[in-house]
Every structure is written in C-alpha cells, then in structure tokens.
Length: 247
Length: 350
Image 1 (cartoon, each protein chain N blue to C red):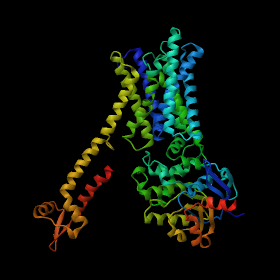
Image 2 (image 1 turned 180 degrees about the vertical axis):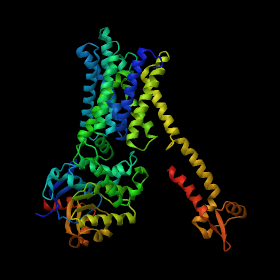
Image 3 (image 1 turned 45 degrees about the horizontal axis):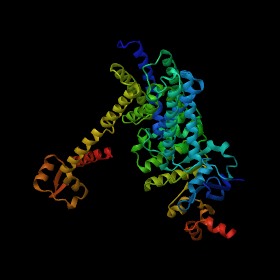
Image 4 (image 1 turned 90 degrees about the vertical axis):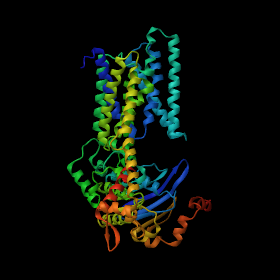
C-alpha cells in the first residue's frame, strides 16, 4: 500500500450535526492535493481530524501506513491565518522557531541547529529581512509566508495547509506555489485547502471535491469535471439529498 | 531599608513578592484572553474558606487556604462542564460562577458571624484582604510559592508561549493542550490562594491583570512583557503597602490596586510606542503637514492635473521640493522623500 495519506470511513459531527460523512481518501506521496468545496463543506474539519485536533465519530486516518501518534513529528501544519492573535508580542523569527518545538520536545531548550533551520526557512520564503519584525506589523501575505516558514522547519513528510492563499498578493501566491513544488520534488505530500477554482488545474495534481461527503477524489485531470464541480457546489447539501435517496 | 520598621518591612516584602509573581503569571492569562477567569476563580475561593472554617472550627490559615483551593478547583471543573455540555457562552458561565460562589460565601460568612465563637473574627478579611497582619512565616511561604511558580513558568516557557499564541498548532505537534491549560490554571489558583488574604477575593484579579496591561504598552516582546509585568506588580505592591501603612485607615489591598490602576492609566497615556499622547500629537502633526503639502502630494500622484498658484510654487521651489523642467513643474527627489516621511507618520499610527 503506497499512500502518503489515507482516510477511511471518517465521520465527524458537532452537536449531532454531521460535518463530514463517511470520508474515504487515498493520496499518493509526492503530490500536491487541493481540497475544494463550498463554505461549510468540512474542509478545515477534515484537516483538523487528520491532525487529531478533533475526535471523529468513526473512521481512521493514517500516514504512510502509520498512525498519527507514530507519525506526528513528520507532519507540517499551516493553520488558518485568522486563527491566531497577530497582536501577540513576538517576532517573526520567534514564530518560525515555534515549528521546532515538536522536534525539541517538552522542557528542552532550542539548539543552534533549530535557529539555523528557522533562518533558512525565512530565507526560503523571502522574509529574512523581517526576522526581528514584530508580527503585528506584517501584511497578510507576509503573515502567510511566516506561517509557511514555520511549517517548513517542521521538516515534515506531509504538509497540511489551511487556506494558505487567503488574503495573499499575487507574488506571494506564486512564491508559495514554487515552494510547494519544491516539496513535491522531494517526494513530500502537500495538502491544500483551496478556494480559487481558476487555479485548480495549474496548482494541483490531485484533487478532492468535498461537500460533507467526498464528491470525487483523484488526479485533477480525471476528477475536475464540470459535473463534479456542480455536484460539489449545488445549494442543497449532498448529505440530505443522498441520504434520502438511500432510505 | 528606609527605616520602615520590622512589621512594615515584612508586609512590603510579602506584597512585593505577591505583586511580582502575579504580574508575571498574569501576562499568560491576559494574552490567552482569559483575564476574567482569574476574577471568577478568586471570587470562587470564598465559600471554600468558610466551609473549611466550619468543618475544622479553628482559624488555622493553612486549613482555610486549602479550603480556598478546593473551592476554586470545584469552580474550575464546573466552568469546564458548562462549557462542554451546555450551550451557555463562556463569559456568561464565568459571571454566573463568580457571583453565585461569592454570594454563597457571603451567606456562609454571615451565618458564621451570627453563630460562631470569637475565633471567627477575621474571616471577613478575606473579602478585602488584610496585609498588615502578615508574619515572617507568611513571607517564607509566599517566597516558596513564588519560587515554585517562577521555576515552573521558566521550565515550560516555550510550551506555554506556543500554547497561548497558537493552540491548534500546539496540538497538531502532538503536545497536550490539556496539560498546558491545566498548568496555567493550577498556577493561577495557587497565586490566588496566597493572594486573597492580602488583597481579598474581590480585588485579587487586578493583581493578575493590571501589571500585564501596563507592561504591554511598553514592549512587543513576550519575555519583556512578562518581566516588566513582574516589575510593575512588585512596584505596585511596595508603593501600595507603603502608602497604606503611612496613612491612617487605608486598607492595603485596595491601595495596591489603585496604584496598579494608576500605572495602567499612565502607561496607556504615555507609552512611547502606542501612548495616547503620542498618537494625539502624531495625528495633529500629520494633519498639519497634509494641509501644508497637499498640493505637493497631489502633484506627486497626479502630475498632469495639478495646478500650483504662484505662492505655493514659490514655497515648494524655495525648499527644492519641486523644479521647473521644460516649463512644467516637476517633483524633486527631496520632495518625494518629504511626502514619504509624511505618509510614514500616518502608517506608524494605524
């Protein structure tokens, strides 16, 4: 079994309201996979369930055949930019260093190599000049670059990016895509929650269309069809209609 | 020490240590946006103190403080239960716990006062606190606890910082949010328990929150925020205790809180970074400059549509902000730099 990320029978509910219903996914290594779907489709929830941030009702997730517990040091994560308080008193360099905390472990101090990794990552995202900048002074695109640098220092095999292009300028978006392609070239897997349907074909080689259920998942050229897009974005949720069909 | 006398020296040492350590720890609570939790938990200690007294029937401080700890812990568990199993909003449940525990404590207190023996005198001190009766042994205890809290914070520094800044990322690394959150809360409750006797359950939260708010105005670094906050808290303790001791009938706790409140106001007004005074003057200067240079700015942004009258042209020419080229007025490098400096003030301020 050669899959970097595998989801089986995953169902998640908040307060009895199903948010993800019976998800099955199989993502090969060395791919950049987009997840698209309307608001409330469960895109972020899927990522959070993968990262063990929420407990699913049922189902399981595995990474290269291993459980989250065994694999979590090789997972990189970019949460939604809006999920943190950018007024927090800290610097760009400090935020990037946070990506190393998992490697270093509880209590132990950061080492010189951690600082070097942070500097290198800042260089890669073109933010070296901002290392000592207070994070509240950053633009949206710069904030996103900092988050991506923080994920890079995690030195992961698989990356989960929750809307990395949110509020980002064109140049930053291009720079980020270049980075993703570099990761892919190292046979790493990048999973990206995405919104812009125009760029799907050029950005991703694997795609999941999600609306509580998986509408389709596979190579972009196969699954990115007009019909699938319509099924994903139609107003009544798939769940209610299809469940009724099944009854 | 300034010839303060033995008793006052003891009290000042105690409030200084308490102020310092609550200031430091308070920064974690404030940046986690849970400033109200300290308030709810400190109010929630009151019934514990009373119940402990009723059960043991002596005014043994350690017993009363254990009661306070247990009571705050029960409140914490209740807050958690309400959060997880009902749809009541968190701020609502905090207000609910705060007032009902405090009310319950008051009822128990008046019951004890009506029926109890002479030993009950002094229980009411827990409401507003009384630092003046502090003994050498109390200072030893505060020192020990402050040290324990300080060392714990230092040891788990990076974990606590990351947890406060980005909980999702913290959890995604496989680190336990329950441990981090539990650690902060237990430390806060410990500080509250040693603090309530000095400043009282009502005002204890000010010691946690005010120093951090004042410190935040002067720094953009987490460690400096924590350090300054500790310093400000200690200073508040020292000044407040001194003021209350040297004037008749001034309760220590409230005076410390007033001193800390003053620090906050001064910090918000005069901070060199975000101070209201600085922003006010920046704004005035900015408006003045825009008024004086608006034609220059317009020339910079819409070169072909700008008409300068003679006095304006003279003024800008004499300062080398513009030059005449082929009969057209053109902006110079110096002029551009000027405009940029005007705009920079504006950006700074936002």
